[in-house]
Image (cartoon, rainbow, N blue to C red; front, top):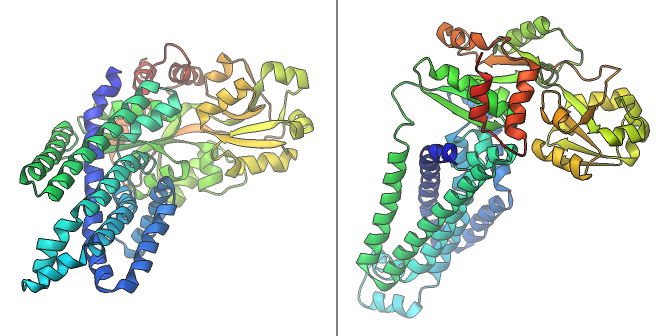
Length: 502
C-alpha cells in the first residue's frame, strides 16, 4: 500500500493535467462547431454523426491509433512530433469528449423557449445580447450536463493512456492487473473514481448556479476546480526539471516491469531525472526506441529477429546485433545474461496422462485441447513457425493477459499455454515445458537496447554496462516469482532491488 501511495501524487497530477487539457481542447474545438450547427441546421447531422462515429471506436483502440498516425506525420513532415506519451493521449481523449459537449450545446440552445427569444427581440436586443443574456442562461443547465458527461468520460478514459506511454492513474491498474497487485489496482480505480466524482460534483454546483443565477454557487464550483488543479500541480512538482529525463521503456508483463525498475535505478545514480514508461506493446516499444521517444529498454533476440528484422533464419547473437545496428541504428549495449524464450507448457499430470513430452507429441492430440495464449502470440512469426514445423491445430484457442494464462491452465480453462522460459511460475506450479525438436522457436536472449540518439552517449551507456551478463536465468525466475506468486508478493521495484544486489 505504501509503495502505491508514494507514487499517487505524481500519477494523479499527470492524470489531472491530461484530463483537463483534453477537456479544455474539446471545449475550444466545440465552440466553432456549435456556431456552425446553429447557423446552418443542415450541418448538424454530419457534425454530430462524425462525433458519434468516434464514440463507437473503443477508447483503447482510439488511443493506440494515434501512435501510427503521428509516426506517419513525423515521417512526412520531418518535424520532431512526439508519437508517444502526452500528445497521442491528448488527441484521442479530446475527440472522445466532443460528442456530449456538442450534443448538449445544440440541444440546449435550440430548445430555448421561443417566447423568451421574441420578448428579447421586442426589447431591441442585438443578436449577441440575446445569446449572452437570454439563450445561454436558459440553455446553461443542458450545456453543463453535456460538459459534466464529457468530464467524467475523459477522466475515466485517461486511465487507458498507459499503453501509449502517458503517465496516468491507469499505470496502477495496468501493472496491478499484470502482477495481480490488487492494492495497486484499487488505488488506481479509487483515485480515478474519486477524481471523476469530485469534478462532476463541482460542475454540478456551477450548473446549479447558472440555473438559479447564483454567483456564489458558480464561484464555489470554479474555486473547487482551481483547488484540484493546484493540488495536482503541487503533487507533481517533483516531476519536472530543467534537465531532460532519461526515459526507460518496459513492455506489459512482470519481467519487463522489474527490468524497467532495475534500469531506472541505475540511471538515477547518475543524478539525472528518470521517467519510466511501462505497459508498452511489443511493436510500440521498439518503434518508440527507434524514434527516440524512449532511451532504453530490454527486448529479446527472437523478437528482434522475427518481428523487427523480418528474418526467417536463426542468426547468432553477434550476427543479429550487427544486423540490428546496421539497419536500424539502434544500439545494443549487450545481453543481460538470461534467455526468455516462448515455450509451450502443460500441467504435469495432464502431460503424463496424454504422453506428451514435445511439441511433436502435442500435435497428435492438439485437436482435443484448448490453447491459452497471450494477446499477441498467435499473430507472431514464432507461432506461424511452430504451426509450419509441426502442423499444430488446436481444438480451441483463447487469449489472456500473461498472468491469467497460468490461472486458466490451473483451472482447466486451457490445456496448453504459451509460457515464457524465465517465468518462475513454471517450476512453482510444476508445469512441463514441451521440447522443440525441430528448433522452430529461435533463441530469446534478453538484450539491453538504447536509442540511436543515446548510443554515442558514453556516460549513459557506461551507467548501463554493469548490467551486461549480470543476471542468470535462475535469478530472473526468482525475481519474477517474487512478483507473480500468490502469497508474500513483492512489488516490481522491490524485486528489482533484490535483483540488483550482487
